[in-house]
Image (cartoon, rainbow, N blue to C red; front, side, top):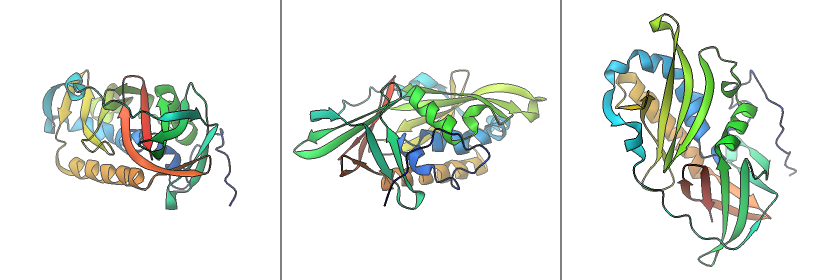
Length: 247
């Protein structure tokens, strides 16, 4: 079966699932799926219920632990493209662009290994291609930005709040890699550097659903490079890059 190259053309106005793009978003660590596609559109409603969240210090405290050391890939060599397969969500090909995303293959512990690394600019580039949320086409969600942190990230947006007379507030969805190294969890909201956790009522159920769906993508993720298939072993995030280590 011939795999089509990823188009650089934006597909505005189409649902993400309908355009078959979830596979591509899954490979970028599911940050876009969790933070942009579902959580950020809900932020105006979340902010209106902020009194139901529990304050929990500063956002910096959520990222106090240093990221684990990246596994060493021996006999490392770059590859020009990788093929991403997420079963029902489709197959995509991404070309190597070092300032955005970079791919390396080799061995680790005597087994074939691969590393797929994304910069903040790379994550946002894919978001702009595949969703309308990063292109300022949604009047309630503007100026999306991504801030990688040790073991996680914060996805920011200017959210317009009808409950506050149409005022716009900068909000962030705080995401962190869990202890397994293979899953992302929603920690809380970043509002002016303060962390608010434990979403109230129905929002807690929404967050649980988003986490489950996003992590299902990670669990089914496979990557093929130079004809060799790889499955996710660990997500490694520092202040500048997000890396998927696969074997």
